[in-house]
Image 1 (cartoon, helix red, strand yellow):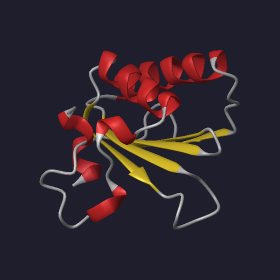
Image 2: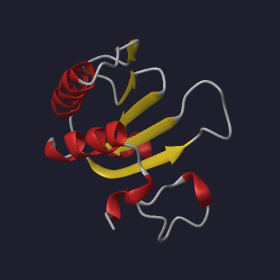
Image 3: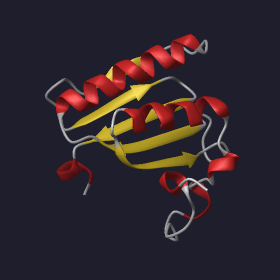
Image 4: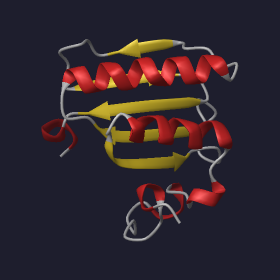
Length: 116
């Protein structure tokens, strides 16, 4: 099991945090792309049974604005290659938080001080 998205130690989040084998391929690809860009503390939340607005949310910690920007660009290229559209980005290059919206999948990247 991949420790970035395991249920172990996630008692307060319960069934929203998925085991690696339960994650769809496109979401798994995003997790791998974030890891390749050294994003840490990655969590995947399954919201399919809770909201009609998106199916999955990924949270991660980026340690600089440059790292978040590179991760955003990598995710955009990956998702577009799989037929997904980038619907929007919130938070600027100097922001301590970045939201990347692929409609059914939303990624939040935080600086460590913001995520706490």
